[in-house]
Length: 269
Image (cartoon, rainbow, N blue to C red; front, side, top):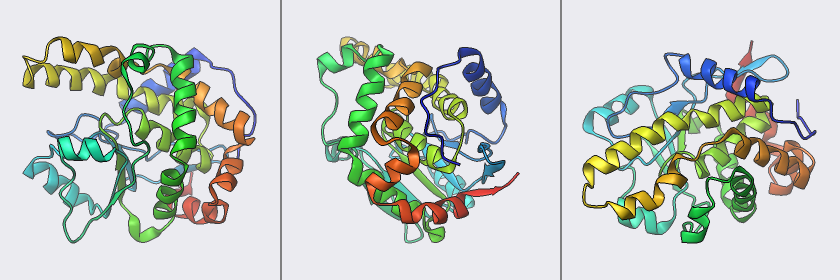
């Protein structure tokens, strides 16, 4: 199942995959307090299986969820929330209001947010791909613990998220899908689905914070940067560093959980 060879970016294949993935009516959940909450179900693997629907989700921040949004998630039977944000983000923006039926895990992937110089370079796909790999290495403990949680059937349905649902969430989504054997063009296509959500998020930020002006524009380029080369570069970086996604699992100390992870998330054709 594991693909251990670096792959060349094929624009036609990736853009076609992104369009196909985004057209599925059940992909995005229409929540008023989230812009990037979507299902990772339905994605094919190289061995002919598919990721189960309504089992695993990825999202942006969950602190703005409305009562109706909570009702929607309750209807899904949501059991687990994995929050990848830093302690500072939680302190400033709040977090998901977990009930007795939902397990909440705060597993920050990084303790610091990008500085000004880093934000300025965020529209360079090579820089972003390298930064994603660094974040994976620095957040190895978070990724390992997240995979431990996601390998347990009672954890589902589950969602993992950061603030925008694009970068840290994109890294963990790529790792999970890579370990399941989902092809690169599908992983990259899923990553690109954040483009539309980022445009919507930026419009909301401008409406809610009209006086932010220059400060908001400072983050615009980094927020809207969702380039396929960034994700493909990251996937190739994983293989260059670890040989394969199974090799990554070995480095994370979770290779013994792969059969459980695949059993709970995959179904035949």
